View (cartoon, one colour):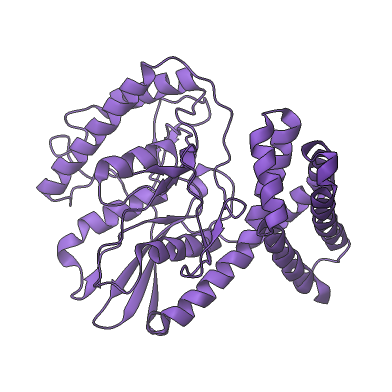
Length: 399
């Protein structure tokens, strides 16, 4: 779809030239290594709408689960985003997707990467994180990691497309989930995170986070299963809707020489879609309260949702991609157009202010985390887990 159909007088960039906005983005990237903020998680708003079937937490987790299943390629543009529309009268559910990929290649690629580094990165660090008095705990951790490492090694010998391949993958995924939800491994991961930032420890943490991504396939399937059992009427009347993506927009302004095409990220596509159809929403349909994503929000999507105000950002990995843009459409109502002008003004204001701060170099962040290692058991959640809320951690910041 064409993302530039508005005339200059109608444009959301009428009061703030987009090239000026993009120049401000480049300036901020240069001062921050393109990572203006640390990775963060945000608590969801308090659930106050008793008319809905979904709790806001279940809505977020189910939307995230659907998004996870349809986006697996690398890169910012590969993110899938999902919104859920409840219809209380018909007891039906619309799952609205933006930016769709496939899942098969990602699983294979992730398994291959982990196989070569699992034992070396993790087992080598165990001996340095436990005292002599803690030998029993250390042995439990070593045993669990060694067991998973052997499973990964065995998987490498399974012929592709063979009868054993699917069962081997199932065993790996389930065992990865078991490792990530083990109390011993959770304690080990916490020690890795707090002992100090060395290259070896960062490598071990990264490997654990990669295992989490494999484990997520089991978590997601279990989430969908429990959701279908808890909300059977929605899964009996389920509609999947796929939004066509917007075409890329060429630009001469970019932080990276190769990145000269602007894209409308999946999260923005969904927000614009629902803004455009507010007055045409079918009777009984409830607009989404949250947006599920396959990866963390980039810095600009985070700022966009924060400035928009209707969809609380769940997280951000903190990376700024300047080849980011918003649809500028002829069929926007005047009130929506005014709102988007205010959104870009607020975003630009925060970008400019951020650039006045003392330059701070941050390493390239992981764009997604499953957080199983940090989660607490919660039988009320369709995912059976909830985020830990540490008062001294950026992961507990509220929106």
